[in-house]
Image (tube, rainbow, N blue to C red; front, side, top):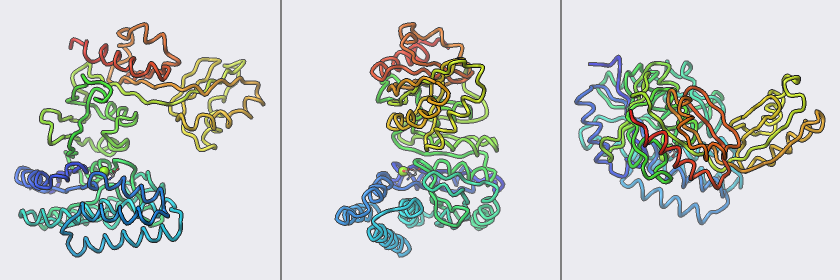
Amino acid sequence: MTLAHPLVVKFGGATLSKPADVVDWVRRRRAAHGPVVVVLSAREGVTDLLRSVIATPRARTKHARVLRQIAELHPALPREGLQRLTRLRLLIQEAERRGKVDPPLADRIVSQGERLAVQWMLPQMSAAGIPAVGVEADHLGIITNNEYGASTILLDRSEPSVRRTLLRWLRAGRVPVVTGFVGRSLEGRVTTLGRGGSDYTATALGAMLRSRRVELVKRGVSVLTGDPRRIPTARPIARLSYDEAEELAQFGAKVLHPLTVEPAREFGIEVDVMPLDLPGANTVIGPSSGPPGMRAVTLLSPVALVRIRVPGGRQRPGVVAEVSRRLTAAGLNIVTLFTSSTLLTVVLEASKASKGRAALQPLADRDRMVLDGPHRVGLLMAIGDGVLGDIARLAPSSLKLGEGLSATPRSVTLAVPTRDAPRVLLEMHRALVEQRTP
Ligand code: ASP
Ligand code: MG
């Protein structure tokens, strides 16, 4: 009996299209491991449907269609599940009435996807002899900050109540089936964790329960050396360190939610990403990296850069802080930054770059700085411990296109003109992944 270290298994939305696979997985894990906590994402497409309602709060006809589609995706709901469906209908009516959806209402609406998924899976698990019990994460006591739509779980605040409830069920021999993606803010309202957030729920629960392992079960996606739509030769990565996985998740590799790694790192939990339809494509994320030379490449495009020439550069301390303060005040996030002593290049989301330049103009006028841009670029990144030593492998013709380059021992970031980005990405993958002799 390993009640001290329950296994947390999270099923992604696409896995729910074959409930029998999910049920089977849980049964096998219980037999092999003992106590299991299940985390579910919404069924594939449901979160998008709910977000489409939020995007057009007055579109009643569309909403009726969305509700029908969602109901069809969750047939044979038990009574409690039907109540969730009614609740969703009422929330959507509230959105229609208000004609505007504020972030807390938006979160209440999108959180229904996970609630319905749990309600829909419960009878199917019970029918297969799994003593499942539904648990809604906000009621469980997953406390988050007040950042609706992209909240952060407060592990210390959440732990007592989460442990009390889940360990009680586990001790009673039950299998808690928890809604991923959902929490409750400090001010007591429903929050959601951002797209793909049920991965994060799973590692957070793992941390609070002192699990040794968390499984993220997916369908049709795996952690690869590159985006297969852009790089046909991309291959699965067997092992990643926390640091590597975090870089990868932060930088647009959609397969992992960006905060997923954090709770795992804190408690040394092994995170296994397991695509159930792609045998051999599992990825283990843990304290140590894989064989030396593991590399992954990503492309973020389009983003745009604004150059700031600072006459007297080094003589002017605080310039970076001032630039970042003004951008933050304008609600803009710096994607990355390239600097020399006189030239500061900030990279922003493409759609917000002009706003960024405008926010910096008064500063430029005051301090006689010269602004240039925005210029659209693609941001290429190579990730892996020791990747800085790989720069010489990159073709000079690619490097020459660079509008900026920055690096740490485990990541190299290169900005190139948008039109060249796909080609340079392929070249990077060839040089750093395919042509590497281990
Ligand atoms: N259902 C949510 C989403 O689609 C959370 C998740 O899938 O993990 O983003
Ligand atoms: Mg989903």
